[in-house]
Amino acid sequence: MITRYDSQLLQRAVAELSKLPGVGEKSALRLALHLLRQPENTAISLGQAIIDMRQNVIYCKRCHNISSSEICGICSDSSRDSERICVVETVRDVMAIESTGVYRGIYHVLGGLISPADGIGPQDIEIESLVQRVPRENIKEVILALNPTIEGDTTAFYISKRVKSPGLVITALARGMSVSAEIEYTDELTLGRSIEGRTLFEQ
Ligand SMILES: [Zn+2]
Image 1: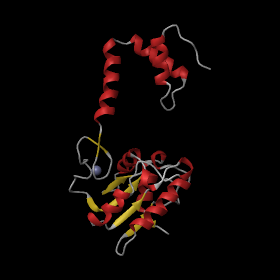
Image 2: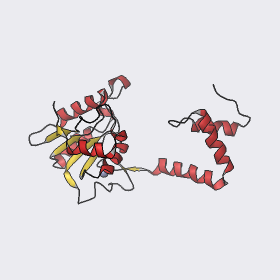
Image 3: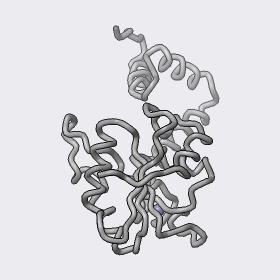
């Protein structure tokens, strides 16, 4: 049920805020009224931060991670192992794996998973660029760090077929720990162990 507001402006702000994940109409109204009570600058700087982020955010040209420059800090860090590439679905997975502190290789962010039910095919995510990176960057190991869902498994299987070549090792995160857990919700210790304990990917 949509509440009618006396102010069209308030109604519009609530409608926009309630489009955010996890924000229902009640929370959206609370946030809107909170912003109205704050000094004008608070709301303006929030709005400007969102506009600036949306218009100016850069994705790394190599790994598609969110970056402040064309090539991200991880890709340009020469102390990292650039022959090991960890394939993840989202930028949040990069953050989760980085927070474990155990992985010193580089990444490739797919930006989604293959999902025929949702009409998402291999060409809709960053798979082709990964297939090109592996030989070009002389990658020795591809680590498939995808969530244990049908979409994750489908994507892992497809990628393994596409990148397969003599001398390339393809591994996947150890799953003994918590089969249903998504990477971003797995605690650092468990995630770290599943990276260290990764196993050969079975095709
Ligand atoms: Zn990068």
